[in-house]
Image: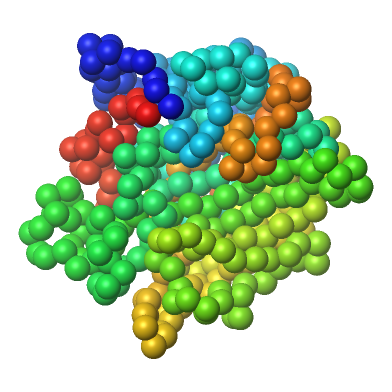
Length: 403
């Protein structure tokens, strides 16, 4: 891919991005975290295991024709960039709006910057983040259950990374490791670094491994097979480093509901544990409630309309040893996690069929709950700071993707 941008245009765009980054980081602090349109009945909830939680953030999207450009005083921002994961779409703020009480992200055949399609991605990166809690979204999926090619997603990413800005993610994604060993050589901010070294330079805590782990609340894939429940919902936890070869995460600490199947996979430097849940046309025609609940260094749990999909406990990520390699405990994320909503198109996910466009991913609301004694909505909490590192490396997080 070649995106034709002269150097003058590049640095001009970067200057504007950095200006808005500094300006908005101050101005949005005056905005309430809880949407005034959220009904009082939604201010309190419980986890799947009936533990009380309170509302700490919400957006009901009830005001029509909102835009999510970087200069809007909102906790969410629509990016203007290309996603370097083999995607066929350009992410434009013009593809994101609100209508009829929902956030609407539309994928279309509109060509942008040499890419065949245009769609949208909305992030809360470096604006509002969550360290543990419950994320609840009411979502209607795009397209239909029999036409593949769409890659809708609702997910969480550690604030030290940023989706679509790959330079920010290098050696950060999806690390969640606080052990000094041979694996640490691939972790940018690792526990092996000396006192006064790189960690201190960027404001991190000494001898603390850092990264940008990922929790996928929703990914879905349609199927040309017209049988009932022909589409699939994917719920996934990504992390680094990997298990030794041949050792399974599924032998202990992974549980699933009756309608879901769990699996494990990975690549050269990271592993993931996921669940596949069959879904039908109703999930494309109407709204359903998806939830993820997580407590750092304890568990992650996914539910759909109140039924369990999967739970992964810290035990599944325990230290492992083998004759040729060993790995320490990987952590259920304690990083501040940003929200992401996007609608992608990539043959890496499923073969793209352009005739289904235009179509939209619709989010009726997003609500985030946390335990009353564990409220943390900062993107740079003192236990896991990010602000100084991002300030000193702003170009990694704001420069347009070039290919």
